[in-house]
Length: 127
Image (cartoon, rainbow, N blue to C red; front, side, top):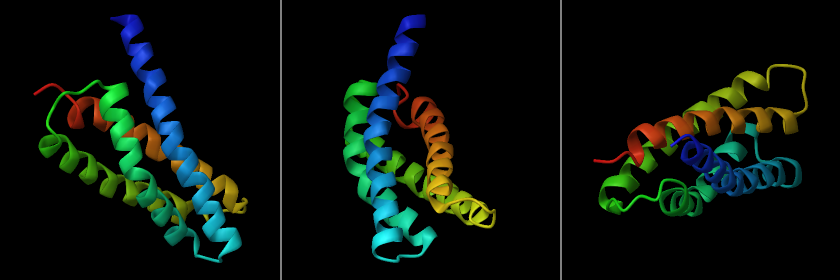
């Protein structure tokens, strides 16, 4: 059981890393290359990374056989909450004297912790 938890956390980090990388690259591209404001760039980038990350988390991390009818709405609700967490964190941190690239990174990491806890305990928890 102990090692299964490490395995799950490792897979979560891998699958989440795919989503985070997508979010991080896209948010910086939107901000630095296309001039999209910080919060909008972060939220747009997050929206793009949602569905591939859902699939990876459901199938590989949590090995859930639960119906998408049950898990997908929960996952999407979590993403709405996480959009608020990431957007709010981005908004608060952009007030500090630090590069926006650092702000996006911190906001994404905060969202990752919230996401793991909620997915494990609610989204993909056994019915």
